[in-house]
Each structure stands twice: as C-alpha cells, then as structure tokens.
Length: 128
Image (cartoon, rainbow, N blue to C red):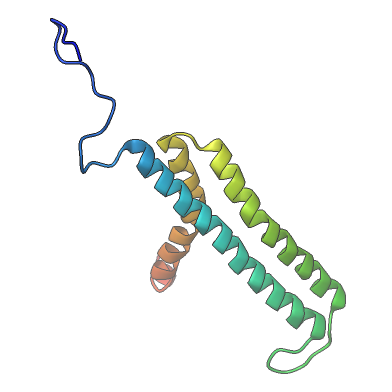
C-alpha cells in the first residue's frame, strides 16, 4: 500500500461491528416481502372462509345459499393468493434505495397502523 501526501486511502468497508447500509436495506426488503406474502395469504384465507359460508349458507345457522356470490369470493381468494408473491416480487424489483423501501413500508404497514389507530379512537368517536 502506498501513501499519498493527501492522507490515507479511502476505505470502502464499514468499521467492524457496524452493519452496512446495504445490509440493513436487504433485511428490510426481506421483512417486507414476508409481510406482503403472509398478509395476502391471510386475506385469501378469510375470503375462502367467507366464500364457503356464502356458497353453502351455513355458518352458525343455515340460511339460503348464494352460490354466485360464493364463487365470486372464491375467485377473490385465488386472486389474493397470487397477489402476495406478485407484490413481493414487484417490491423486490422496484426498491433499490432506502427511500423506496420507506414508501413500500408505508403501503404495507399503513393500513394496519390506521386500523389500530381507529380501533383505539372508536370509543371516543361519539363524543367528537
């Protein structure tokens, strides 16, 4: 290694014990991909349950079955099964920086945070 009169050569690695920025971005991308897939599969499971209940007309007690609406909900369940991995793939392909991951984080975690906020405020809403 040669030295220059302008100071030591620039290092391109992070100091020991400090994770690099790209490692943090990679971890966040993996977590968001897992959340996207699991969230879509959970929604698909609910849609499949509602599809069965609607098509048969029986849940706690039986009523008139609606096979058309049940089939539409079944198609929604299939679409949600495919949407989770597709959204994870899309997020993986379009997010290269931490700013893009922040946008995806807001899109993925925003509805959950909003629902938690509204459920906490629901007892106070009649007084507003």
